[in-house]
Length: 257
Ligand code: SAH
Image (tube, rainbow, N blue to C red; front, side, top):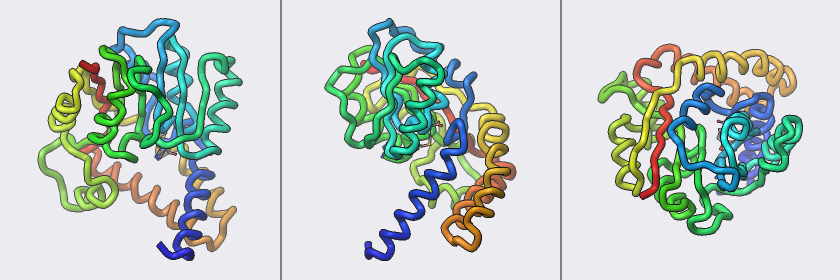
């Protein structure tokens, strides 16, 4: 990569981070869905050790903390997200049990068999579903749980436009049975898989972006990177409206054997 490209990349990175800092969550989800996924997990005590990987600003982490026992470490690549995460934990008086740290999901700072639960909403795609399931397994105690949400196809076949979009964005997207099979092959008993309701995308993820997009474009007039970012987000919304019967987010919950 040339240094010119690198600096463009750095600007993009900062803009993406600023854009998504405006939201409680950085991906599709809801408190109800977080609680539903948690309802399949029965091994937690006050001493449990939990990791929320790719935690963003911690929207789902705080819900998790308010509904599960144990201590939670949130990890995200963006320091700004972690700053907001720790401020959010403080506001909710959860700072003794919930701590955010900057780090990467491919170099997690946990010991072998240290964790009772690995949580990750809308983030495992950054490392890839299969790789994440395999690599994170060693950090879990035997009988520990993994709960991750991941984009998935609902049908075996789909229109070319949406297929192409996802092959560019995340070629590892696959059908629910194949994802469940990958979870099994990675060394977990698949405990549950459920589709996130549409509102997790529309009401909770897409709608809050509209007013922020206007403000963002006003703040960065003529900035190509800002315009591209907003254009991409808008395109994503249009595609979802058009093709939502073919894909969505699915929560997968497994227990390490
Ligand atoms: N779990 C949050 C955020 C999902 S967005 C939610 O559901 O709202 C995906 C997150 O993964 C972003 O916060 C992004 O900064 C983070 N991320 C991307 N690559 C990462 C990596 N290599 N290690 C850790 N976090 C990463």
